[in-house]
Length: 448
Image (tube, rainbow, N blue to C red):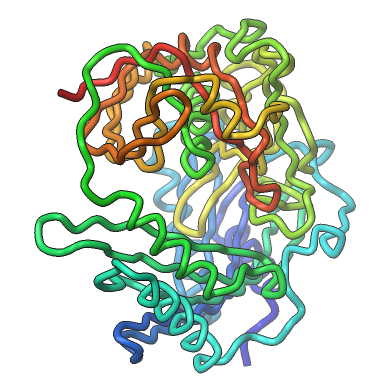
């Protein structure tokens, strides 16, 4: 019978101490997942995985090493610790490495209040297949859809436990349930595809599978017979589906690891305007039923709500312990890690201030320009913020979409155009990144 994860992580710490480590932390993850793919009304793929993964990080002075395994026998734990200590003694010193001071650690939390794990029973493979089949059938029922490339449903559940020699020990459970569909419209070289999907913590919150299939089909049909727009500077409305990517680029530049390396266009930008006045970006890791929620980070620090951008002004970076020490700043409890790697900064749930106008009202304001609904590739200079991405969407004239567009490249500078954004009010509140459609004036489009 498998050992409880708290017992397993403590056994790893004991083995590390016995092997000669000065300090250590251990992570154990026990999980299971099931994925079902349907094609043509029949089961195409059924995949289930389950198991326990363990990771051990040891410190010998300021030298460190990490080892991982899926074997939890006592002899394996001892061998892991001995190997990790031997590796650490050969590693270069890092003056910023080390565990948190006990005074920094989370001491109490309420995982139940975050509702990170659905208490409902795991769905059967037949139930998942039924969801995937319903989505596929709904897509195929829409006139003009020639085939469904993929229709899938999945479920996952995992238990996480972190323990460290500084006295921290804590864990939580997380679950997810998803349905997705990719529809293809048209024939031959004129085929176009698009998708829809949903992923939730609680199965009862999941959107209806038929709605997902139908919306995937409608989106594919909207992309038929695309053209290229005229080259020039035009307003661009980033649809809510992909608007979060702009905030993702901002967060990448505000990541402490990038800032500490000097590879960020936001280096030295604290206190400067990075978004329009009136817009704020808030991180809240305590939102119930949201995938980015957690009571503590991967170094045992208590997570908390914080404002990264306030009224357009950058207020902070995303930091784990090591990057905080490098930058001589307090950590922000944003460490993430897996069993085979060390901590690194990562953002949790984000929400951008929404506007007071609908997407349609912003379309009317933009007059003539591009609505972007999908993007491919990316060329972004991390030092300057120069931005170039391939895109597809709808061309708009007099505030009305008139024809689909593909094969266009959007270019600009992030530091410049992020300050010219106008948000709509259409963000989906159940996502980890709550970002509405964003209108940006004067971006360069490379088309015909």
